[in-house]
Length: 372
Image (cartoon, rainbow, N blue to C red; front, side, top):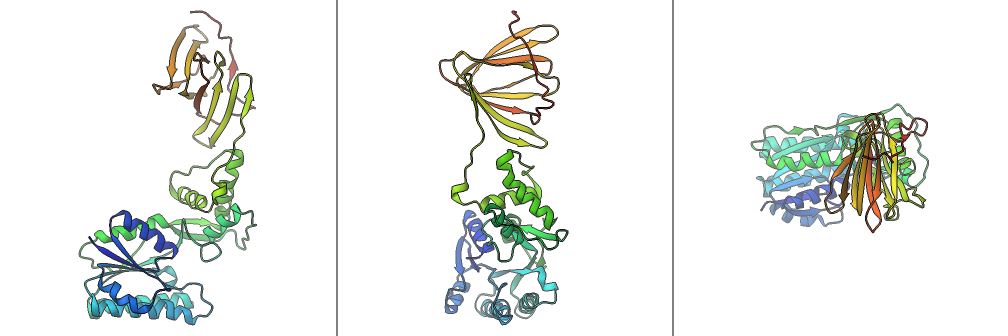
């Protein structure tokens, strides 16, 4: 079983990487700034792969950039070259290495130290120049505007945006970790520089609007498409900043003598989800739609579904219950109702293909008393 060393393992990327490597069954050793430097050699000797994530990006003085990024890298590379040259080194650098600032220079010099060791000592090394990384466990008010915006919106702290049109180029932590873990399978590595293949661009204003929208979704029950792309990554990140007392939230429930009804979730393009209950003997519905369509699932109790064609008056009926989960679809031009024919409360989940619009409901009442 391969052993891995992660420097900076208690940082944002380090925590996520450690979890992913353990999921893969690797033995993970760690080294942080709190550890004694004398422990580093024994850990380097003991492993097959070294992920070098440790570094400094928000120091009190520029000298700390040199000591934390350049000097420590030099120490680590020297140990690898002298004591375990067969180990593979994967270094987390920054796109800032291309820029003329103290942080960028310290990362660039660290890269050069690694490149020199590859040439002179024949160590195996790879360098990833990362754009701004965002995702769960990233510290707000530190070096990620995404983390700061999520934290502030959740805690009702106003957002400060000096340049709303400024475009960020960012990478999601899961994509970074996938690239890092997949690197274990690279054979005969002749390249030294690598990139995260999935990157996102978004303006500060659009970022703020998305995150504010995530919070608003609990009030209006409307959620954006969060199943792919940057919205998927941002929504997962936003949720990770919720404190435990905000893990749940209530939705409006409308009750009358027949039972209760609640809208649960609305989407701009994929309809809405609801549920209703009916007491024994109660019938709900009694209407038809021209275009709107629905899917019903009985999750508790026993129901009689009745359909009537509004032109031919053809009538069909069938029973459904929670013991045999099936979806019942409403058909345009067929009136329908649902009766609780059991002795317990009926609970039905409902999906509609469109959000209910009170000004244009596409729901026409119909007398369902026509006999077969």
